[in-house]
Image 1: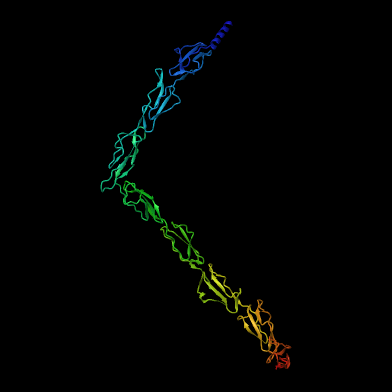
Image 2 (image 1 turned 30 degrees about the vertical axis):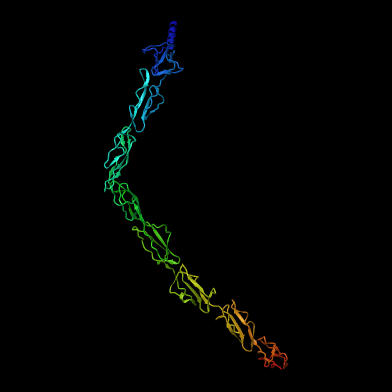
Length: 528
């Protein structure tokens, strides 16, 4: 039992205190003493490290690893930091694409300005050579991108004839030679100026082909139903532009502007001016065009005619429509508007006052003054009425009716008679003057009027017997000289002129001797 306990104790000691293998390889550091890779190290063994080339000691960090009792190395592996290469510089007309740092293993790239190409490697790396930190190769250079000389052209030249080398951005301008006497001038066809440029940033090329100097002539531009707005010349050559406008009621089909091209043709082709509107709609007598908007009338435009007040078309309608057809003609010409007729205003017991107003047919606007024949009147009691033929074909006012004229009874009084009458019949308002026969006197008003109730106003008078005028006496007078009526019992008194004496009865009386006829009571007295 004692032997078994000793063996277990020894096994436990071996298990707890393990040896450490060689430490793992560090990227930035290595053991100061070289290792063969198979050594074992007891717990507590300290191993010193030194930085590899291109790395330096990290401040405040330990460079020692210690073997632990569990067989693992203790300590920080981050004991060295990479060193940095020097700033590599930039090529002329180029630039450095800056990295995060110039440390070992980092790379930098170079680019050239527009118009320059990179000669050399675009990328270099910070490396260790002979234990010294440096760049892997020299920085590249930037060379201007060259172009071949610009092409020569017939009948012209460019502005760079005195120059041998052409680089990116250089430009030349072409011009044509002046024509000889009697020749047409040359036109520069194409881009007058070309520029040295590039597509791949390596090889130069001109921005467009060289132009040509050639004689270009386009025909005189003419457009039917159109006119030239601008650009007129006796002769047209390359680049000349003309602008067209169509005549009224024609529309442009194509481009309004054309340019003379090197093909001796107008581009785009000259336009067409095509009919786009009917002419003005025809005028119609006594009609107006309703809601007419503008003076252009494309196909399917509808024009509505409305007759003026009191007029209508022969169909009896007040409106008429026409439309613009495909051939730009109107569908029809409407008939004129005629005055609306009114019926013949026949009035029984009535007549027209003025013969010149009488017509076989009456139309809108005609007037006719009418009156009733004798013994008839209008209900309105008007002596005449003027009728007007209205816009609706009816008379205004409506044709009146003549009715028998109401009148008062004939003013017959015994022993009396009419001596004056205001008009022919005894109608309302008529005035009559009466007087009595010889030997009779009028009692009441001698003038009477037919009232609205068809009675005489004032009431009819009557005639009663009277004495005649009192007998006259020379050189004297009686008291009744201002009176015309002397009824029974009336008396008159006589008096003589100054200086004369009255011989006989001073007073006479109206009396009757036979009970029927009246006479004065005696002869007149005498004045002596």
